[in-house]
Image (cartoon, rainbow, N blue to C red; front, side, top):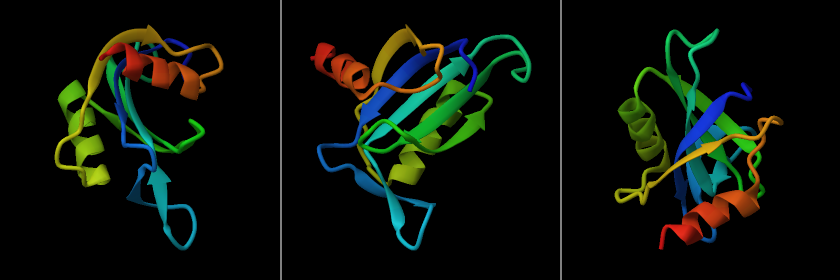
Length: 114
């Protein structure tokens, strides 16, 4: 993933997470976090791309989707989670150079939002 990604939205799907229709095996994947990032104006983003990530309880990527607008990325998260009322937390934080999501950092963003 691109190190120039900026985290714009974080959503925690509860202590246990929820099953999403992403199959990495015979059963749906359990998703705990949905994160939306913006990719800077550089290839392959033309000029800006939004990425919605579905993460397990360890912060490991289950799947992702690229979208043209922030609203499309948010809507993708809502549709795949099947949760009617998602609590999206706004933030502006760079994704670290490894391109990995730290659960401690995601939890801090959620805790700091009140």
